[in-house]
Length: 427
Image (cartoon, rainbow, N blue to C red; front, top):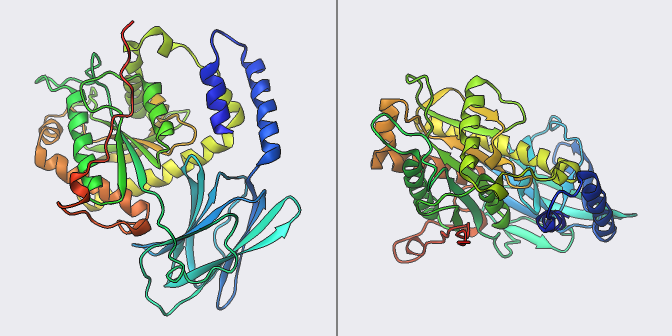
């Protein structure tokens, strides 16, 4: 469905009325849904003395995959090409599951993560029903120490899966992170009193974060720009979708009137700014498109608001979870944060409906102390390492899917970075 809507929108020229466009899209979507309409319609939980179980009622028969994630111990279940319309309650009193998180982890995977209170193993079984399935995840005690994180993958739920350690199938694909160094080209971004350009700081921070992520192993990193190039905001967001990113991080170092304010801030998308500072920062960042050509400044039909509202809500929810985790991890590494460091506003670059996205202001060029840090190679490496650790911890640690640290002899000298945006052609 998502690909169809993308094609429909990109193929439109002129001012076709939104209502007509929406009707055409809905008509095509309903036809496609007849073939595959994968939705989690309900989720229930139960707990006994020796077991916790979660039952997922599904319309359609999706592929599923279970994973064990380390540091902290968690069990995850992925539903491929599936969305959730289920209301999720807190776990009942039990001896195994402490909490549940859920949301889109990429454009085609919806994940439930069960944080464990103790070592355990998971199994899933499938019960057929008219028009779909019930997939039951059971978590039971295990005296066996957890092995490497592995996944189980099958067409439909894996029947009677045993301990994940014994079912080590092919590892999950590489984690894909898109890094977006803000501004570039004719758009300098913020400029400090001493003449430091934000666009240059953002690019250096992106390079440092790229290197820290690649050093973890098993990570694919994509940059929206690798040089002094201007990229419109919509094109930056589109890069995350095209690369099927698990996470999109937009990197900034803004300037504000309050020169005493310093420290990092993590922003997520919201229609209404969480506070006046967030409104000002979003307005400044969104103004980058004043440098874009007329084609990029035209309003796009809101087809996504009509057809993908559920996807957008779940993506924002996942982004919120990551933002909270990132703020916590930065604080534990003694990276300076502003007061109330997790905020939200209507950032255009975060509006991809199916890619979890955050915008990180690593500091303020309007503050002299922050400016000195932002220009310091050692500090950039430190904050990049802290951010990379936060990303890997959130997605399950450096061992997820068989990942390992790289050495100079192998993965570290094989950059998986590439520029995500095609250069604009001259007229």
